[in-house]
Image (cartoon, rainbow, N blue to C red; front, side):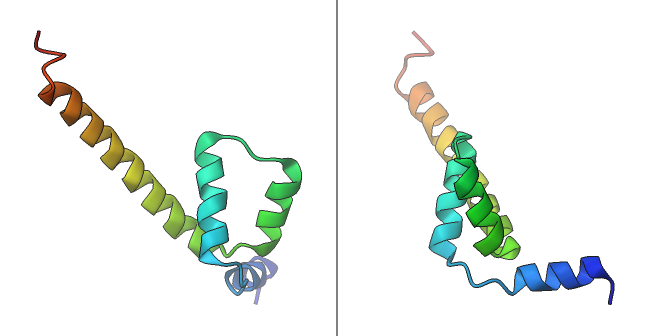
Length: 80
């Protein structure tokens, strides 16, 4: 097995909790993260969890934007 394949397999076997992953992804959406926190995340978090949490976070962000636009349009602010 190549070194890259072994590294990916090792990374996917990490036992970081999904809650830790959600917290790290939420901080990344805001763009604020300490260097030490980032290094800890890289060492502990499962990359599969990071991808899943990122997709969930992006979907929630888009849903929030759609709801906000519908609320603004429905309140009559844009039409007056």
